[in-house]
Length: 524
Image 1 (cartoon, rainbow, N blue to C red):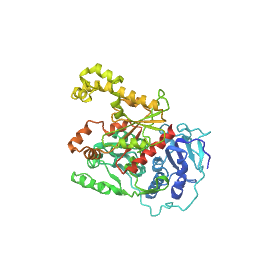
Image 2: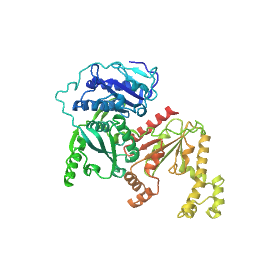
Image 3: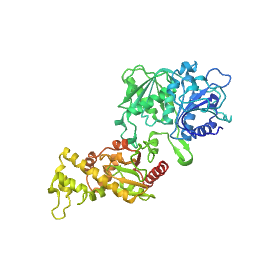
Image 4: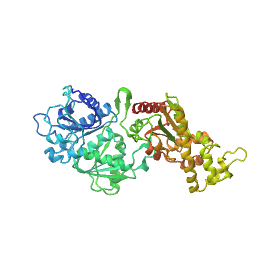
């Protein structure tokens, strides 16, 4: 195996088709690639020596490609592996089949087993240079083969028009197996029903589901990468069936075993409308055994992928050259009942951390002698001041702005900067390594530009309501109304660098926080 000096972002594995018939070698080769290609690995299966063309399409070919995707999930669950399919479906030169390959596949390195010369078209992918970015892997040992013989392999049926459907959130190996089956069966147009956000509210961690336009863009890019010859008709669907029960041109539907009933129901609905029956192709999708740090048996699901996002960097922090590197300033925020305070107190136990409860410090900022006190008296007069103590009566101040949006905005423009200044002053006096600013209205106050990172905690609305009702002794209507006045989970998450969810037992939440803390130490 070659000795690597630099980990690349995107790579292409150029390897003989015989690799597919040796599934026991999949994991070793993929793990080797995963150590050196961080984001996307394209896989190009070339004909074996002595063969001019790729193997014919069979169920065995699909089964082995499925195994390869599953093993990529085992090797690195969040890895993006893409197995190119067009040259497996059609004969022709690579230049004819993939005329825009050098533009669509931007890779930093090519890995090959050296069993065949690298085609000229692969010499110019992205930043690849023959001098230093093509690396030779040792050929996999020819261990016990699976699927090398095509005897007993089912004939592979293809159609001009195929339909599939799904959420396709954070595309994972299970999605890729479904898309591979459909694309291998499709000759002209693949229609994909994409579930809209409104139908996904009951999904686990629904607030982390990608917006539909983002899911559509990512889905189209993946499909176009692995087979650029097809037309991809991606349609938002507002019901379980979408175009599958109304499009008369469709010929076949592909689904996994877990969605078999839904696929069969399509033909029931089509029969009611006098439409032709679709050929139904079902394939198995099994749980996966993963070893190591994430050991366990799990299904390849979007909900699992979303759960893995918790405590990890969702969005890299923006550069803040105007801020000193120490203390490193983190904003922690979340809605009522989200567990924000518990997470803040746990972070306070980390070495070198100063935990700042901004809502409590805000009371200090109002006190007589502070700059905010003078500004508010100048703006609203002495009627807001207690005549005995000289302190501002916040209840009186609130009554002035309660029903006046413009007045409330004016008050916030005076209060929020002053409170932030007071909190920063407190931190600078203490001079910690890291300061965590716990503030319910941190994003609304616009404090993000004064912080290195924003960390957000949330729970689903139903759980937040339950917690608020139990904590504050109010009814469901009052709890719901309180949440309606606050920024939504999704809007907060859009601003977040790191996200937590305290839906489960506290040990799970602590693990998320520990992951975030360990990641932070590596960044700073």
